[in-house]
Amino acid sequence: MLTQLSSKDNLAERFDECLPEPLRGKFVVSGITNRTLLLLCPSASLATRFRFDQDRILKSLQMRIGANQVTEIVVKIRPGVIKAKKEQRAREEQRKVSNTQSPEERLNKVLERLDSHSNTQTEKKD
Image 1: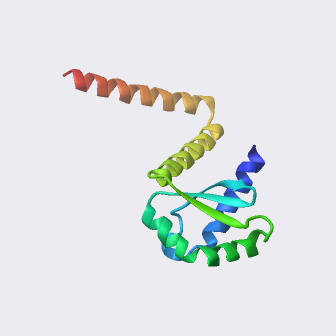
Image 2: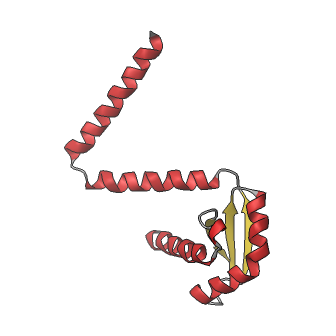
Image 3: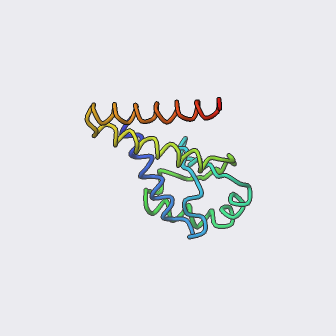
């Protein structure tokens, strides 16, 4: 699973390199199925803009990852997909940081969150 994740991230980076500047960072690579790259984007206007350059982007991507890997690109519209992806990356980064923290540091963070939560609950009652 870890190799799938890293290869998916690598594919997403390669794909992003192929995009014109206004489209970079606006798509999420969902995966490849039967040589079809599945992309998610937050709006129909972005999908339409992408379709104007789709042939050029596909050729550029094929040069980067190999012509046999992807022969078609399908774009699906999913509002909020970029925000969800950013939140997921933030959670992953937080997990990495928490894995490097000592147990005492993690305990202190938990206690701080509990304290702030209890303070907000007290303020709501007043």
